[in-house]
Image 1 (tube, rainbow, N blue to C red):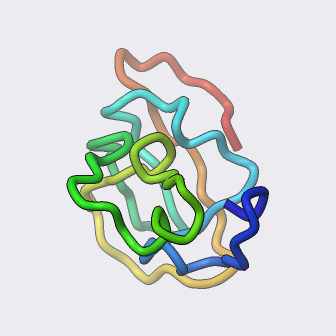
Image 2 (image 1 turned 180 degrees about the vertical axis):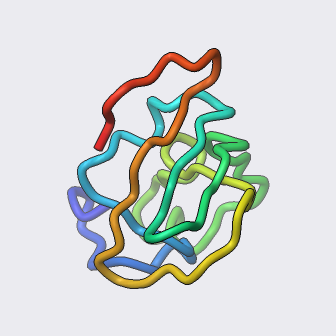
Length: 100
């Protein structure tokens, strides 16, 4: 979104966790991510339908959420903080891959 002129940063899309170094949209649904010392999340959805043009779309003429926003459900709760590592714990069918 910066490429189309928006001054955005972590949290501006109401995300709970912002990552770098992982191509999250390439992970299959069902992938389990480990965050920090014990939290575990299962990828449940890639993208979301934009039913109404959001403020980001109005400003930029585009929105990344239908293509790049991922969603997950909490399998194991735990504290998560800035700088915590996000790692792929498992992918469906136990096809272990190193995405970190």
